[in-house]
Image (tube, rainbow, N blue to C red; front, side, top):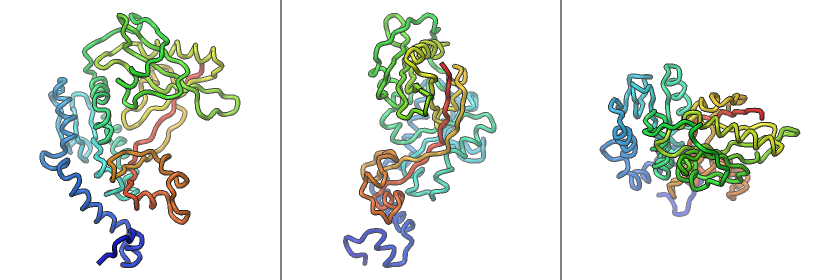
Length: 328
């Protein structure tokens, strides 16, 4: 009985139906039509891919869907490593199905519950796994302590050449932008580690801060003292070019930032959960900056969230970030 061309707002007002509830009914059908194959039995195909990968690199004790550790389901858990993985499917972990308050707290609450009993929880979003699978596999191998090659930072030479391709190949976020300095570790003529420094897009008064924008190591390689060795050169470069300090951020979805603490950084600010958007129509993730009202044609009388909701863009929440600083 719904007239063609009516918007969700028109329908909800005309028929006195809650717009969000209505949209979830319609979205549920869209989901069934478009994503049924992805989430059909065996349960969580992509979660199983991560599980199978960890098995293949020697984690024999991992289990799926464990409910005995924190009382809530952990998608993948290794008792021997005291590490867990939460696979965040775009539909199940977005506001397409979750109420906003639940969605905002869901990931950070589970991370805190794990942290209280000494379990490290790593979150992986569905599209990130799809698009950067090789980089996540490398990250997980290192995080679980299963790299096969072990070097010492002192056995590596230092190089300052741009390493965009290296970062694209080995860093989860890919290559950085606006890099001013590179510091690389080389072993037998091959790059095995790299660090990039950029200028901060906002400078605070007299404080001139450089940003450690990326740090990565070759897949399967552990370099003891490698991060600190690169940082020592980066600090010299930063100081020589008028910077007062170096700052960086750790993503609470995957790390508490211990590596920065070991390098001598001090955590000076913690940021709460933030969001990005899942674009259902195109099955892509979009930054919240790209969906600002001024950039999307959103009517003045509507909120960004409502406008995005009507256009099948649904917020997904992370666990926040932590800022680290070291004086040079």
